[in-house]
Image 1: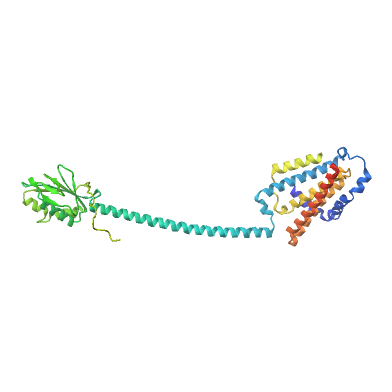
Image 2 (image 1 turned 120 degrees about the vertical axis):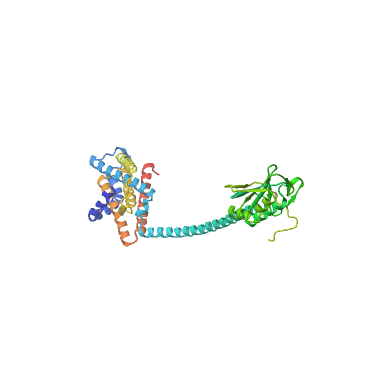
Length: 279
Length: 110
């Protein structure tokens, strides 16, 4: 209907313009005389009858009004109101939106930087934690408080008549340490294995036994050691070395190189009574 | 009665069809609607006083709509469209009020 209205407006402007407003005014103002002249009895408007054509025309016009009303209400509800807005209104709306966008962008960037800061802090903390954990693991292996596994050697001492002496054991431990051993334990055929750390002592005991950190070990002793296998093997086999010495005294040493050596024995770290870390 | 039914039908059709208003007409439609409302209230007023003239009503309806649209169009061309359409709405609103007051006086004698 809106389409109908505009062409009419264009086409009939000159003709209607002259009569239109005048007629409208006339109707309102000239209503009185006309009405008084026509009838002046009791008002019985519902009996008023119109010619069929006029009624149809009026119906069409009023229907048009209702239609336009509904359409306008509907289109006002939706966002399409923007499409009909005037230029200055649009400029104002655009300015508002621009300002809002700018504000929101500032907010975004500040939040982004905040997030970055937080995440970098978090990352740094995680990194430090990881490093500390790694350090604790290293130190635990070094101090013998943590079990360890890895490539290495199994050195089995079978003593001669006098068993395995403490000095031979100490020599081999020293030799292996020199060759880069990282974790060691000594085990006898019976009894639990003993972790070898910096403070481990080897003492000859009665009956061919060896006291390792006051654990009595006798018979065949197995030294499990984690480190670079080839280097340690070479260190053990040098002329005048451990293997040589044991063989000369009538014992035997066998060195095996399994895929993975387990150093399962642990010892508790001694409580430091005097030494304090320098922080 | 016919007019009431037609109004209801028009509103119903408008709500059901949900046509989109052409961009070029969007500034004029609300003004045209208000102008038509003025004409209709004037017509009702005349009807109640038994002064109703069908020809007059049709012409005033059409001319009201056209003049309102023309004024808004002119205002848009002159760069005062917003102010002028506000003025048109104010004037038409006053006329509608006057018409409704007349209707009320005729109907309720008060």
